[in-house]
Image 1 (cartoon, rainbow, N blue to C red):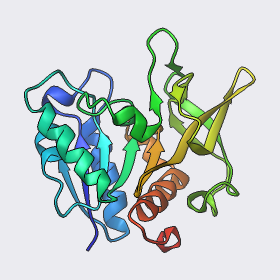
Image 2 (cartoon, rainbow, N blue to C red; image 1 turned 180 degrees about the vertical axis):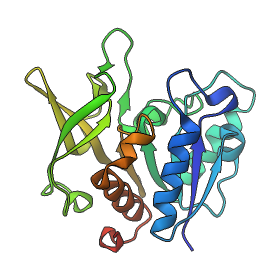
Image 3 (cartoon, rainbow, N blue to C red; image 1 turned 90 degrees about the vertical axis):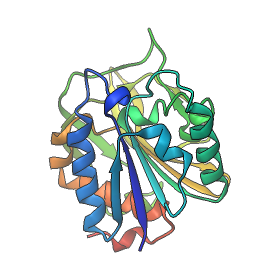
Image 4 (cartoon, one colour; image 1 turned 60 degrees about the vertical axis):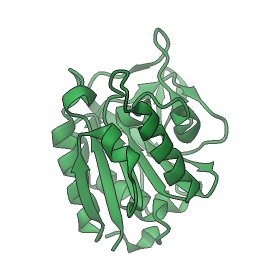
Length: 221
């Protein structure tokens, strides 16, 4: 059975803004619904140090402070990526993972203080581009209650297939990108549990997880 590990904000990986326990629980329910055996851990660096048997990591946590465990976490992550492990990085988890410097190259994004921002949490309209990737093939434009990131530092190698428009500018929200043999999906949505009340967002997560683990996204319900 495919195994996923949700790296959830808690203890030193929490922050004042995100209900990580709530969103990690919602994510776990979605993944289990498509037959993925899913574990949630909030000891992020310890979990990263040994990813044997894991097929998909789902970072959903703040970066956390400097730690003597960081070297082991970095080594474990890089070994996991080198063997082609899947990644589904969610919301703030895409912006930093245990302070590992290579993480920006993995997700293709960084939050830049004094430049990056997001909309207030509320109803947002997002555009889906089904011709850009198989994950998006059955999806249509939708609305959900969330916050949308803007003006991130982005890598041109990313292929966005969900976007939103603000003040005449289109900002990417969800994309895939290459990283050796690893399959990387970044979903910057998912601020709190109400984001996953959206049927379309749940379907997007299902399809992203299946694709990132080398399965057909058409297995999603």
